[in-house]
Image (cartoon, rainbow, N blue to C red; front, side, top):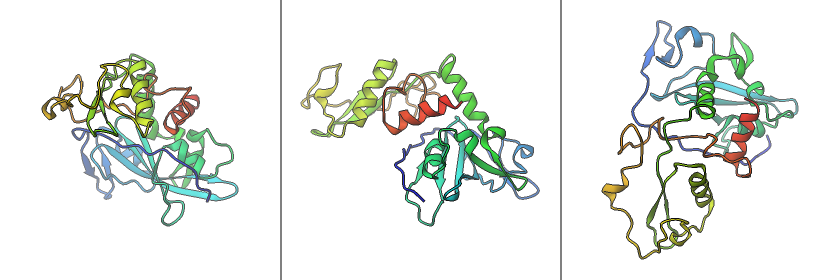
Length: 253
């Protein structure tokens, strides 16, 4: 199996948004996300957390055969795949587009068609299943009225080790944060607004808990303020894996 670079993302959530239930056949599913009827014919269904459902998935290359993984569908629309193409695969958690690329699929950039799950013993493309329901809803939200907000984020100075706040209210502010996050040598004096130096004290810990969520000022991370990709915080002219995956996914939506 070819080794490809991939993007890893960290999922942030507040309260659990659904409850796990077990039906008479012992199948654990998620209320509020998918009904038993929607998932009963899908193979390898496993509910681990309170905010996602996990199923067996795969992608087929004519050269390398089937690459198998575990797809997690989060209630906020985010999708991630843990690759199990070989024992001890080091790729970690991938976006569907990155998993498709890692599998060696010849006709890449069509992950909705090429990534499959097993339904009634047959390989069925994701776009033909209910599993993209929340992804499609999140995509429409990003292109429509938009999510409530992007919460403030912090980056630590590589010189003084102090955390500095980035407000993400506009596309320009999001780009500043995006570029600073990608800079391994970012320092306080690089902050383009609120001109500061390493001598300036960082915000008090009691103040840093306030991140700008419209639901709760002291929110620790919820689907209203934590964004995994939209037109405001992803950039088509950026070549990083995160932005590239977002652009490709939208092109195939």
